[in-house]
Length: 449
Image (tube, rainbow, N blue to C red; front, side, top):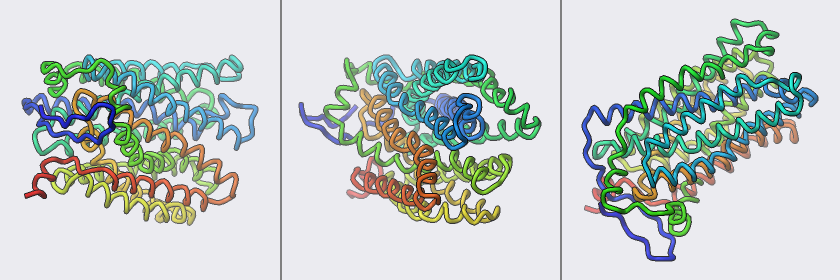
C-alpha cells in the first residue's frame, strides 16, 4: 500500500494511490448488491419520514399549530435526523476504521429499522400529549445516527471491492440506492393514499409505510451478512496501519479536504431534498394539486435520477472524477435557476419536464461522488473522513433545505427567494469541486504521460 504521508501537525489533501486488492467477481457483485439494497432500504426508512413530514406529521404531532407553523415544526423534526448524522458518521466511522466496515453496516441497518418501526407504532399527540413529539424527535435522532454511519460504509464496501478502473461505476451502487429508496417510499405512500380514505390515512394509514420497514430490513440484513469484509480494510489491518483515533487524524491532517468534500455535496443534497420533500408540500398547498399527482411526478423522475448517476459514475472512470463533477455542477447552477419558474407554471407537462431535468442533473453530480470521497482519504482513515465530509454537507444541504424553502416562501410570498437560495448553494458546491484535486489515479497518470 502506498499512501502519501502527511507531515506531523500539518493538514494535507490526501489522495488514494493504492490499488484495491483483487477479489473474485462473485464477491464483488455481492458487495455491490449489498450496498445497493441495504442503502435503498435505509433511505426508504429515512425518506418515508420526509414524505410523512410533508403530508401528515404536522397534524398528528403538532395539532395546535397553524398549517404553516405545523409544517415548519414537521420539517424541523425532519432536520433533527440530519443533526444526528455526523454523530453516526463519526462514531461508526471510528469503529469502521478500527474493527471493520461490515459490522458497522449491520449496526446502522438495525438502528434504522428499529427507529422506523418505532415511529410507525408511536401514539400521536392526541393520545399521549407532549410525550409524542418528544419521542418522535428521539426516534428521528436514532434514524439520523443509523443513516449517518450507513453511507460511508456502503460506499467503501462497493469501491474497495471494485476491480481496477471501475471504482466509479461500482461506487454508483449505493448512490443509486438513494433514488431507489425514494421510489419505494413514494410508491408505498401513493398506494396507501389511493387505497384509503383521507380519514383512514390520517388516522392509521400513514403508519403502514413505517411498519413495512421490518420486512425490508430483514431482507437487507440477510444480504448484508453474506458479504466478506472490505479487502482494503483487511490489508490495512494486516499491514498494521490501523490508528487508535482515526477521527483525530482526519481533523488534524485532512480538515481542509473534509470541508471541501462537504462543500461539493451541499447543493446536490440540499436541492435534492427540496425536490423530494418540499415540492410535495408546495405542489399540494400552493399549486392545488393532489398528493397523488405530486407523488407520481416524483416517482416518474427518479429512474432518470438513477440513470444520471450510472452514466456519470462510468464516465468518471474514463474522464476523471473532477471533470465530470465540475461539468455536472455547472449544469446544476443553470437548472437551479429555472426549476421553480417551471414548477410555477402549474402545467403538468412543464412540471414533469422540470422534475426530469432536475433529476438527471442531480444524478450526474452524485454519480462520481462515492469514488471521489473514497479516494480523498487513505484506507486507515477513509470511513471517518468520507463519512464526516458527507454528513457535514448533508447538514448544510438537505438538513436545512426543506425548512429554508418553507421559511423563504412564507417570508417573501414567492418561490423567487428559493431559486436564489438554490443558485447560491450550487455555486458554493461548484467552487468546492474546483478546489479539489483529481483523485482518479488512472486518469491522472494518463494525463501526465
